[in-house]
Structures are given as C-alpha cells and as structure tokens.
Length: 131
Image (cartoon, rainbow, N blue to C red; front, side):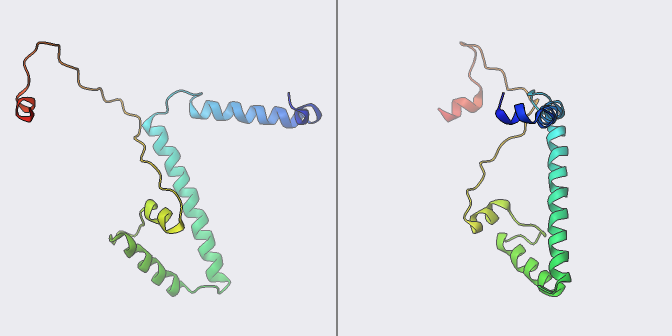
C-alpha cells in the first residue's frame, strides 16, 4: 500500500476499478483477437483525425494559415512518399522528425503452421532442386 492510498482511499479505489475495467476490456491478459485489435486501431485513428481536424480548424479560424495554404502543404507532403494516395507513410514521418522507426509487428493469427515431415520420408521436388 502506498502512502497516497492510505490518505486518499477513494482515489486508490477508483484507480483499482479502472485497472479492473481495463483488464476486462483487453481480455485480462489473454491474447487479443485480430478483430479487437482492428476495432481499437480504428478508435485510435478516429481520435487522431478529430485532433488533427480540430487543430487545423483552429489555425484557419485564427488566421495562422489559410485553407489554400493548408491544401498546398498537404499536396506537397503527400508527394514525399512517391505515392499520390492522400496519406503519408508513418515511418517516413518518423524519419523526418528524427524518431526511431517502429519494427513491424504481425497481428495474431489463427493460421496453423505446416507439419514437419517425418524422418526418412521422400524429399519434395522443390527441396531436391535447391540442394
């Protein structure tokens, strides 16, 4: 028990309830399904889009940048990754900001690995050519 928990038990209880709710939401330490990861990722994207739009609206409203200037900057930056797709590769953005690039992580998969062949079984034609 921390001293803060002793002096503010309501705060400690609320923190504990938040931890329990978070554990239940995320599956309590169990592997998260790809569907749940996708839903969480979409929620994060929606939150970031809202923040970006709020910042842009505030900048335009205050006269810091015009809508035309904003569109020109978006077009110029979109061309940085050599794809005219209305987006920017996050690793390119991290590199421009001097941040470390994220290592790609695979989503959990329910795919089964191929079974190993028993010793003494015939070698498939693909492997014979490789030798």
